[in-house]
Each structure stands twice: as structure tokens, then as C-alpha cells.
Image (cartoon, rainbow, N blue to C red):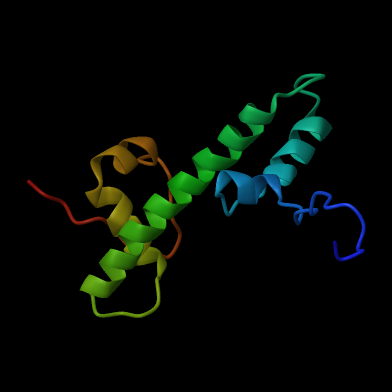
Length: 112
């Protein structure tokens, strides 16, 4: 024996709920927003993760398509025009965000 006491458990470092779920959006921020809004007295832990994951997925999808559009136009910076074209070219995003006005994005090309 080495005389260092009993071989107890080693304390692991604390992980946030976002890190456990593998998310970039903060689960605790969603929790605070739900508590302040008084939607319900109690909210399940799974609901918080789900409510943080959905906007993260939508943001990642839009940013990926917009980045591809900017790269196709040989640009390194994303401008509102790239955002408009990426949303317009994707069928599901166009259905979801079809009525949204994006300022400084120009006019969509008309296809007959």
C-alpha cells in the first residue's frame, strides 16, 4: 500500500447539458427563457435539449447552403444575397421561409 488513503472514486469534471447533448446552442438559455415565459410549472430535461437542437439544426442547414452559394460565387464573405438565393433554391427552406423579406438581398430571378 502506498499510504494515500482508500482508493476512492475520482471526481470527473462537470459537463454542461449542451456538451452532453453535443449542441452548440445553450440548453440552459432555453431553460431560462421557458421559466421566464411561464409556459408551464415544470419542464422535462429532454424537452429542453430538443428545443435547443431544432434551431441549431436550422441554423446549420441555412449556413451550410449559404456558404456553398458564396463559394460558388467565388466570395469569402456571406452577404444577404447569398442567403436569399440559398433559401430560394432549397425546396423545404423556401416553403418554410418563403414569406420572409431579407433586406439588401435584391430581387429573385423569375423563371418561366
